[in-house]
Amino acid sequence: MSAFRNDLQQIINTVISNGTLPVLMTTLPRNDGFVSQETLNAINEQIIDAANANMIPLINVYRGLSELPNAGLDGDNVSLSVSPNGGGSLAVSDVTTYGVNAVNLYILRTLELLRSSLFPA
Image (cartoon, rainbow, N blue to C red):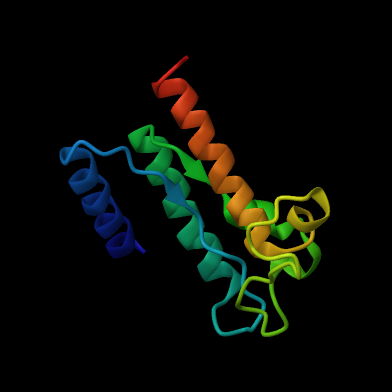
């Protein structure tokens, strides 16, 4: 896991040195058994620690999606589910049920918070 953390830190440093504010996201849940829950937790812990250590924004999609039916996953237990209304639908019924819609909302909320903090009206 230390190699992952070192690589992530190099990416963060490169992005920051180029004048860009990185925004980290945790991994998506998986229920297919291919990746263990312990591995997902360890990866997410490293991502969260890196965000905190570098004081950069984090979108914890793992936590948010874990609250949705089937963790926001489609029938394959790996891909995110999408509302029949499309992935861009931000209707409450869609973002509380479908993974793509929820992640889109999380990203939009984070970007709006950053925009309003960095460029107040």
